[in-house]
Image (cartoon, rainbow, N blue to C red; front, side, top):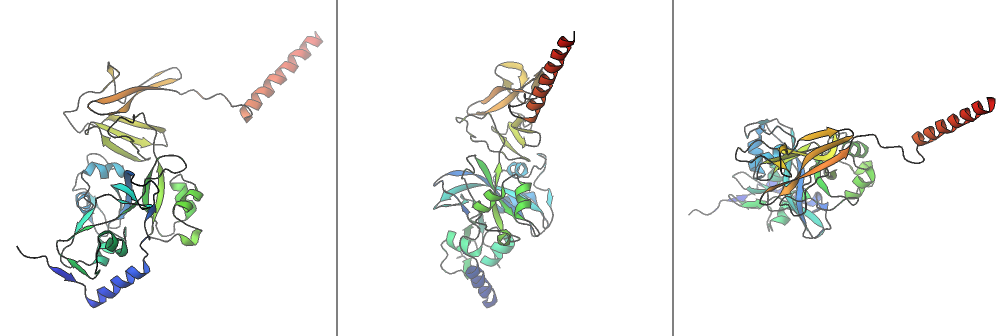
Length: 351
């Protein structure tokens, strides 16, 4: 059996590698994660350097199922691995995260296999589009000499992530690549997060700290759900404009906070062996069905799965809420009542 080929970096590339390590601190893209040992799901932006396909990106990031990428990007579920991705197109990559030593890092994947002509700078900057730094790859793989790597060597790529709650709420931490011309205010508005939270999470003191192509931690609020803590997919955190396929590919749950803050689940329709999913024993009221009666809307909601898929009846009121005490509407109503009473008393006195 032939021994692995040693890749010795050329003098020029060696100098570039040393410079990239010296100017990029090990924590350049790491996210704070204080929940030691916690695991969760996270996403990160990948800007494709060349025209490629979803299947090639799935392979590069060792994502087990293409549907995970489709859901994270809200791509149609019938997309295939041959679906093209244009150069400079941004694709969100879902991956497992684990918290260690106060920071979060991708848990076990992706793993990159070194090929002929590779160097650490090329792998970090070109192959993985600056999601990680050279210094982070060196540290994650205990590389003693950064200018020498082996063909066939497997390198763990430590992508940034976190599992921490934000402002008391569970979130999906999103590694967002800053586009040129972006502002803290604009990013905060786009992802419905306060500027203060964004700055605190990323140790930003002001607009001057936000740099194009930086990866910053953006906490994405997830839709509420009926999923119980005994479910195999608990907690099912799905941010807005995304979906997941769960329950052994039988259920698709999507989040669209612009229309409803509750997670909307229905049969996925991609596995012919999946059973019909009735709600609490009703053969005609199935998962995802909604009925209305007066001001009440009743939905058959997804509640999780173990050996079987659980559902739950969820009823919400669609009537406008009565005005709260002290509100302008309440004051107006009280004003009309008082004026009406005064008119009535005047009429009685005149009779």
